[in-house]
Image (cartoon, rainbow, N blue to C red; front, side):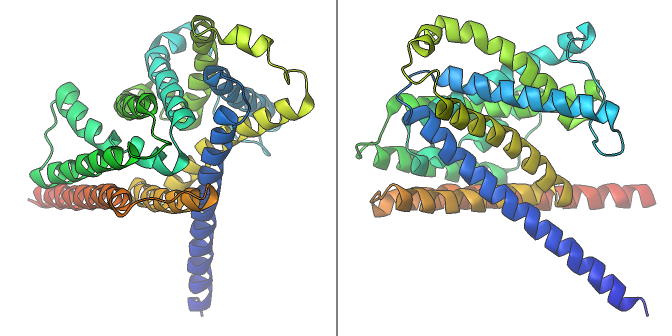
Length: 333
């Protein structure tokens, strides 16, 4: 009697997961293309200003949701918190500095490299995770996982070598890609420590990071001379300019939302697998969209990086399962 209902619920669950994963793919790929257009297609050499406007947009959306949740708690849900609290500021600011470095280097990488090469250019995050986890936390990584990292480095090396033969190659963009991978690894490690100060509320931490980052970007823009460039921009007071800038800001907020949602309805492991597969699709779409012709070795580098990342995820999954079984057996004893 209850079997049809159980099947219906299971079917509904799978449909919901499929919709969320599809939304993550669409929004993530769209965000990369939109950011590339903003950073390279506006004839405005102010990448930090573009990034600042995106975090400002995210801050505004989070603030609005926070206010609405207090006024309409049944309709809108958002964790309660104040980014201007002194103790909160002191505990979260170090992470926000890493957050600022991460999104700045990521956008600077995207500004100078092609969308097709963007994934390979930022593929060393896993490698830095292993190195920094050992250096900062003293946690060792298995030999199998290390071999996967060697595979990723090899793919990155081949990719850079092949990209250097094309007109789209940018050494400074590649350097920013490596720095982006490093800052993302540092951010991931310190996020675990900082979440305890915000009651494990990911959205609240995102809110704080965006607010503090919006302030941190101001001196960076001044140092980089971008304020004058923006002031002299010929399309500064045209509606379409602020329209596309707002779209970029909304995309930046949306990718954070769907990433969190995908992890919630699936798992961190499934999210990593989905992200790896999405990167493959993104590379294929980019080469087709920009009508780029790539060599066999260039494509090989992408396959090696993707395969190394996927194998690393699988190895870590098996290790976690084994650790869990050993803990369960020890508890039984």
